[in-house]
Length: 506
Image (tube, rainbow, N blue to C red):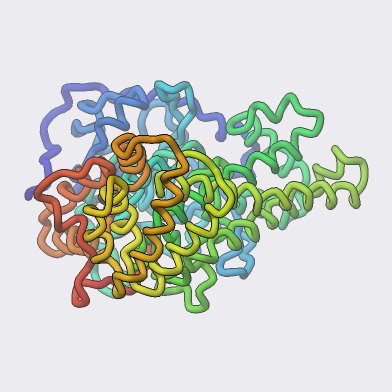
């Protein structure tokens, strides 16, 4: 598949309607820097549905002028490109200055839903935060983020989105020479735990206060009317992160690099580097090539999130002290907020798992039933996604059991569990058809399986064939609707196809 030609003259003016609130914060919050132009930008993919939801004209974005903006060759009217300042703990080690080393926040737009969104270029050239990097991105990681972030959105998980991907006509040099690309990313904002850490590391309490006020106004307006708005902000971020990580766990998603600079204040999934979806259920599964100690393994993700949130609470202590009246009461208040994480996460996970098993009510013994299934899946190498999807068929009766049994090395392990499961289902007056329909709305048929993603990226990078990327994107954009002829996208990897490591996209 050839790349679209963007050499035709413009027929649509590009009006993005930026209103840049972040640029009105003090200049120590960012660096003003324009994207670095590229040689010959070509549009790979434009997210038409997302563009329309942002009140943007897809035809204008796909025009020559639009592609020049999406590549960083042209600054749109109203844009005030910024590279945001932030710090972060990376695998537990604190770096006091990170920042957008290869990204530019072009501006903010209002979506049809009345929500403000950032539009950011990723891979758009060096900034004052690049730390001797080239500021560029390779095509493979750009397409990976496009696929996985759009899959997450379709699954219903809060996430940044991909608006567009363009190739640059230039090469980037990593372990090998790779084609360059730029991703246009859309986010509720790019505020991170690391953004607060940046100001805390400098002892800049006023900066923390300004940032907290901005976060409240943008993401937690209900906190503004509280007696203790900064405590309410902390409560809100903790709750959203607990629900977010619970959703990751429910889909077998492993972020891979849960550093504090990759923890969004908005509660969105952000920065898809060495991420992956599990196939065989392994609680301690790690895919990231740089996570040598398993810090961000699947089962460790709730613990990692709480650790990151504790770092956020530490940065807020000076302004919590102002609210609470003393340092000791501020610390107590922060600890009280953090103590809610475990119960919030556990409740969200348990509720989600009940829905996945077709349980409409909460009963004593449900948790044990769920954990028994997961333990049997782990022992027998059962595919996480496929086992739960096939349970949607088995719920109607034992005739649907065979496809579930096929996921287990020892089919008897499933049969023993299924007997208890069906006893539990009988306690609810719900028809098998209604139960199966409800289960199919929460158990996807399609996820971006690692071997299929890698095949699509290899075709794009090595052969300049973007059709596998297009095909996969269409499939994961409708994850709950099983369609005939797509068995390849449902089937787990064969031993020779298995992807054991994923890599950062820097």
